[in-house]
Amino acid sequence: MMSLFQTQLEVTQQHDARFDIVNAFKSLDSNRQIVICDQLFHNQRTSYKNTLNLLFPQLASSDAKRLEKFLRSRAQH
Image 1 (cartoon, rainbow, N blue to C red):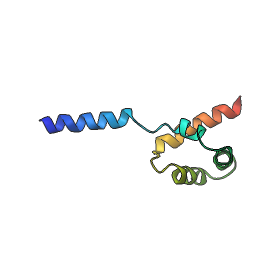
Image 2: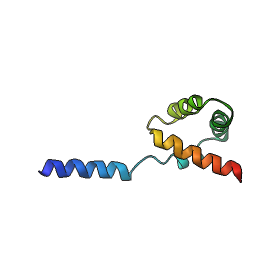
Image 3: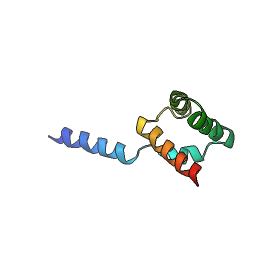
């Protein structure tokens, strides 16, 4: 019973400490930011995701979607 609780606690802690894609994007140099934006706005979606996976190996698919929403909202302003 204790190991089950421990496993649930570890999963919860991993979820709370998830990767912050927006801050990771902001910390990139401007050339890499431009490449990601070009991939998103002018190339295929797979190119965008592949570029993110190369730069951020810990990326989850939800992170790519979250960054896309952030970038699209910034582009409209």
